Image (cartoon, rainbow, N blue to C red; front, top):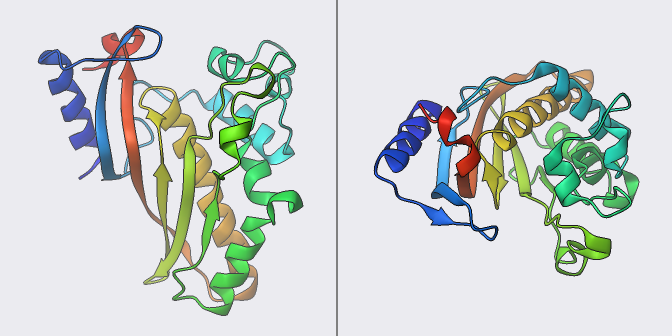
Length: 221
């Protein structure tokens, strides 16, 4: 299954009015247990490269404050909804994967793959059991959306398997895809310092609940 198949699913769901009502009372269309090859950077709509560059830079900074995303303006509404009254969030993916306080998972993945290129242990864990006591702290609504990402080398290509609990098709997928592609390229770059060259390969995208919000139904075409 590819992005084109996912696109057709949502077009069909909207046409047949197969709606689910979310916690705000708005309609959504969804796919439970999605698994597909992420062979396009967008399912619906066009990626905003200027914003993507800012978000990746913010991830790399490891700041957990959304006010650091856009120094020249307001942070995106989705981040403001997730953040505490002070702008704090849980989901800076650079912090979760590269900071020492989260065990420098990027470093461990590269070490594992250079030691054992056939390994099945090279994974970065984003979510954590303690999120149950942290997701709503100080007014937050940030229950980390990515569960884990696994990396495997096969035929000199680095394959990524992204596992998410929840993913918004319109904004979430585009921005998350860009981050996961950046991270895949980073793993390759660091690996290639020590071992023969590998290149980024396929990304498999697995989502427990992949959805489109009612406000974006006009893009489903």
